[in-house]
Length: 101
Image (cartoon, rainbow, N blue to C red):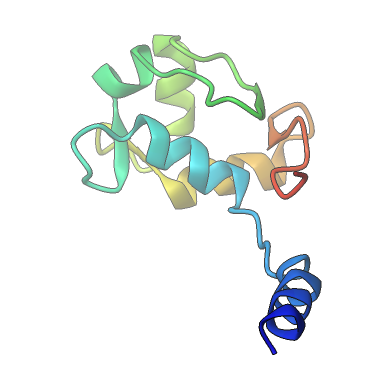
């Protein structure tokens, strides 16, 4: 019985991986005060998490101002996603399959 359970678990476990949205992962990784947005200070200190590629001008004050569409001094996830949808040169994507093991 235990062997069957393990076999079924392994078979269904392969379909259980649902990778996080790369933009959300980037934001969460760099949002140090956990307010759901990146301040200028967080943007200037931002890093690219392992497994991601970011094609934005990180740590640039002018890029921050451009991304801060509503001029509230923060980049929200919606502002970032809007940028990624409308600008072909702005990308955040997985460099490797996060579900591969």
